[in-house]
Length: 258
Image (cartoon, rainbow, N blue to C red; front, side, top):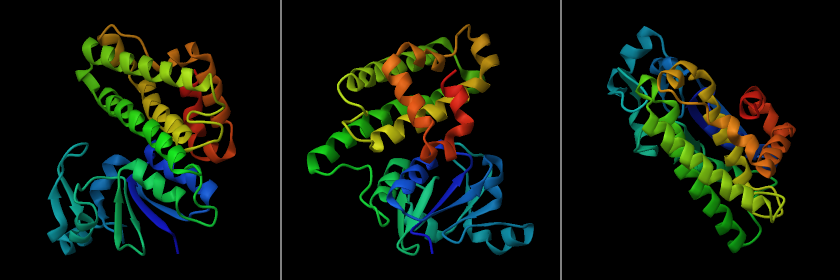
């Protein structure tokens, strides 16, 4: 039996935060899901299933109006919404499905604190853990802008591009400075801070699909500028080459490091 069950659209670099960390902690994780458009055909629940038309009729009471990121109807059970009142994915279940965990960083922390090698990548003192959390909080602010940027579609304009470019510069400058003092983002040991870094860059690598929108806005790709931060670029290159990371992120590596 798994320690953690995650429901998400796939592929999703934010889910990979937990799966990468689980390879260090020994937590057993089940990831259930499908391509984003197909998630409308799934029953969102601890016992998630891909539904037939007959299943949709049987679960008609779970039909909900889709919100951010989806359109039309989604099927979310009352148990799912009790576990995750925000109703979004990725969502995780722990303790045999009785406990809901939401937000990718929290799911990642659960993976770090679960398994025979736990705690893993989450520091060995309250101060170290708090420092790691500080980097995670700063990365959340960066991640919010990434989400807006890669989902802008034809709404991409110079203002949003400028916001993304500024956030990228500020984030990379801070991490370049941090790596000038330590081998890893938050200190001298691999931590959750390093995991969220590469996973959010993997999400940002969806910029590679935005050539038409960037051209229409007379803007240039931002992620290739990673190479102008030599310590950070070398660190990301090293992490992506490690088997614990490559298992999930190998398909993103050439776009991140372009």
